[in-house]
Image (cartoon, rainbow, N blue to C red; front, side, top):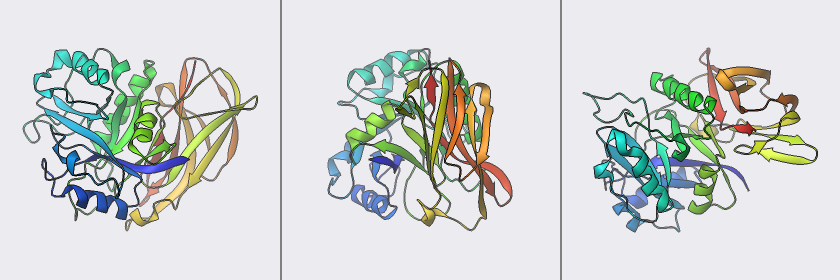
Length: 315
C-alpha cells in the first residue's frame, strides 16, 4: 500500500479524555485518519468498546507514572506499570516485549513538576535497543515548541549512538473543540489495520508531518530500499515522494511556503539540499551513518521543518 496518516496517542472518558470510544473513532474518520491507537492512562478498559467497523484501533495504554509517560502498543496482555521506577525500566520494557508490545516514549520534554508531575521522561533507560519509537513532535503544531526541539535533539543523539528508533507525532487527543493545527504520523501500511501499523512502527517505517505526505527511497543495482531499511555503503539514486495537499484540511490561517528538501545524517549534518519538488538526486551513503529526509519551508515567514522521516541506515 503506502504511507497513510495515523494518530498514535488518544484518550477517552476511560481516563482523562472527553470522548466516548466510538466518538473518538468517528472523529478520527472525519479527520481522514487510517488507524488510531487508544492509549488511555494506565488502562485498557476502553478497548472493549471499540467498533472495528468504524476505524481500526491499536490496543494501547499510556503508562502514566511520576517518572515519565510510556506508550505501550499492541501488547497481548497487561504489564503492571505500578512497579516501574527509574532504575528498573529496562526490566519493565522486557516484560512488555515478552507479550508482543512495542514501546514508545511520550513527550519526553513536556513540562514536569510542579505543573505536570511525571510528564517529563526521567527513567534511566540503559538498553535503548528495546525502545521502538520516540514521540518527537507533540500536540499543537501552530507554534514552534521548545519541548519538540529538545525531543528532536534527543532522538538524533540516540541515532548517532547507533540505535534504530522511529519518530512519531502524538496529538495527545483528549476531545473535540481544541483549536490548533495538528500533525500526524504517516505509517507504511501493508493493510489498513492495527497489525500492519504495529509492524510499521517496529520496522521504523514512519514519518512525522504537519500535513504533507513525504517519504523517500534509495535505489542501487536494481534494488529499492525504504525508510527503516539498512543498506550497504555506496552511491545511490534517492527518490522523493511529496504530496503537499494530502491533509490540506488541516491548514490554518498561517502562510505556509514549502521551500526545500534536506537530507540529514549523523550529528544533524545536512549533506544535501534541493528544491521541495525535486524527484531524484544522487547521493553517496557512508558506512555507519543514518540518513533521514526533511521537508522544510516557512510558516508566517519563520523557517521550520514541516515533515521529517525516520532514517535509512547504512551498515
